[in-house]
Image 1 (cartoon, one colour):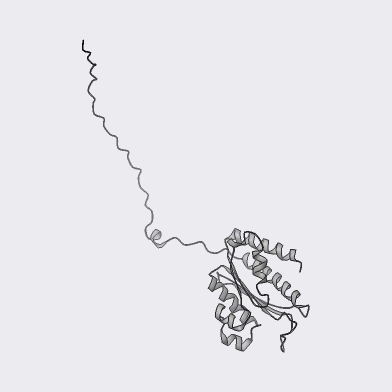
Image 2 (tube, rainbow, N blue to C red):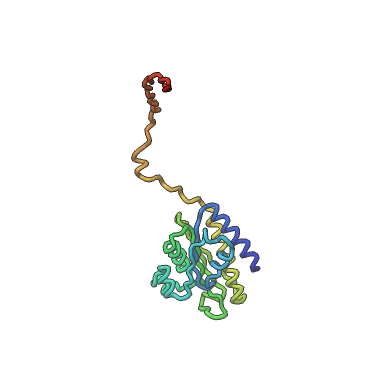
Length: 207
């Protein structure tokens, strides 16, 4: 993945989120903050990007994002279940509109039975309740390549989520709903009566 590809996609994502008034948080494991880095490299990204979580260890995933210990024990850090809980945790902790998570095995080591090098799980979550997860098997293409391709995939997933339904408009306050406006008749302008003025006296001149 060329750096220009990530930069172009990051810029497009930021422009889209800015136009729709959406904010983003990232939760990254194997990419170590590269998604947040790609987005914040673009000038003016601070009005969209709220924060990024780098949760490399299981303890960090649990403490910072609320990933359940039972989930980590049953499915492992590199799993659909963990990725979803990471994204939802980032969404809730940051109180943003969109969140993305990445957890995978970049290599060259770390593979386990059924989980080869290059396996990466992604999830995106939105404030309106949409959650999308994806599994990619990039293969043993090298640690750097797995990480860079993961960044691009995460940006694409965020772009798709940002194109979704607009966030609901803010509801009017209860007070304004409880007190509907009543049409009033136009006020009559009070006309003040002028008092008659006394005739002006001619100035007297003393001789």
